[in-house]
Length: 160
Image (cartoon, rainbow, N blue to C red; front, side, top):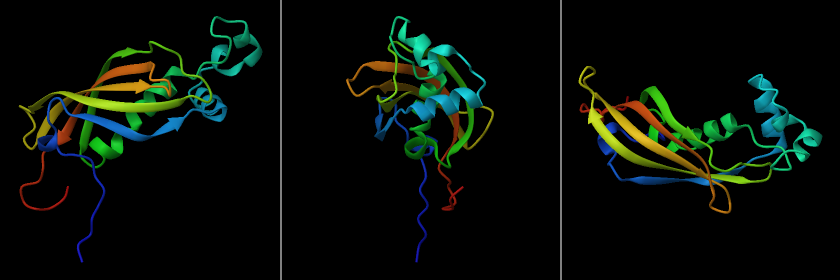
């Protein structure tokens, strides 16, 4: 019997222009916001204080944008990088064009925008991807460009 292990994709399996829709979405909760904000020592009243936030421009608490970023990127792992990632090299062009609130559902997608074999690390390749997070009304709530180092597919028939 052959064992099948869930994994993401190897460098050689990714094609520029491919777009991955990561499902299911993730509904943001008050508990997510309070726990994440507390764990990261971000005591911003806009995340934690309902009375304060009610008198601010959005009229309610905002989800911590780092929760939104982390969840958006994290949603891509099982489809793209699970077991195939060597290292995350960087995140750039991070933006939060619309707010995410408690009760909103975050839907994430990833587009592969560039790939190239590593010049210094044989058997590995560098992938640039753009992550986009949208709420249930299709408003873009987060974007980020991510560069990652991934394994190439093994040539000896064994999994890494």
